[in-house]
Length: 461
Ligand code: LLP
Image (cartoon, rainbow, N blue to C red; front, side, top):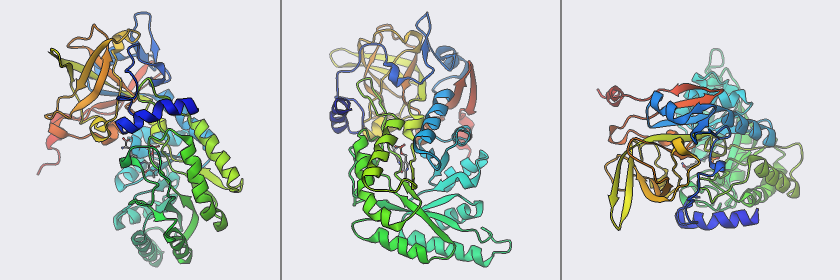
């Protein structure tokens, strides 16, 4: 593990977010198999299939840009998380959410972490029982709290004193209206979000465990203790546990062990049933990166719990998002122009960009690119893959290596776009959001339809 981390961390520091830009020489061989979904396979003609479906044919039939998810990969990551951490483990829906994904995670035995009324609505619309949902968010509105109580969400993670006040008020109102009231006098099962004072090695935008944070109650300041005391006095509240989340795209499992150490002294004397360590496990985006598995992550966390004296019977849960969805998905684009600037660089423009993947612009994140029609081909040609938006920052892959044969009209794929791609997509420049398909057993099913131009005026009045 040590050597792997050493290979990864310098890249994260320089490029900002586990990206690989500048971390190591870009990979000129065929795209590395650990960046591809589990069922990816290269045929005799060198073309790539996922879930038994040929990607170039899929792009021809469904159009581009297209998000393609390997359903079997998603299911096996969910099952791995459930197996590794046990009951109560949740899928962090912010990574990628649509009704099909919500159902899939629930079918595989996970809870769902929702952090807004919108995510709550999608999960409920998918038929996921409210009792399997955990509501997050650092600024839950009255309406969100009331909606969650009315639906009967399984757990609420409280984040601030203002929110405690809102919860108290909502429960009071619901209790007062017990007969036919909104939550029927139900008890809210609550976890308290704390900031453990642990700085995860990741981009500062997605680092959340440090004291100086908008999230949660500080441990060192005593706020977390005060929140628990106040909750214990509140009617209609059952305090079930403590939650923390140190950040996202974290490669070092030791960071999570440090989190457990920081939490143990506070958590153990409370005698509560659940310790949620949040999400955050990193994934490899480029060939030179390697990330720990969910099982390795869980093992490190369990070891830290035992060392810190956290009793065996405590439910230690986690909320992976990226580790479940990222590698399961990839984006297919069509190459529209190839612009060679002698002595400068070559720009390959595709039919999407920062509207379907804002991560390169936001975090300087690196990706790889390859041609599914010749997935086993070497990629000696250095190009910059850009989108179709009206700004120079609209970069898809800053430092890509592609096969020499790349030409206009080719389907070009960027792997590992399954997390925080579609979920952060926008309509910038009124570019319609792509279609999303799940592939499995040699069939593709559309799970989110492609937006059309008429959708660009759907909300206009
Ligand atoms: N639990 C909580 C409370 C969270 O805030 C998050 C992510 C997760 C779980 C899931 O974290 P994951 O396992 O996916 O790392 N847009 C950024 C990532 C932001 C993550 C926010 N919170 C990106 O594209 O890298």
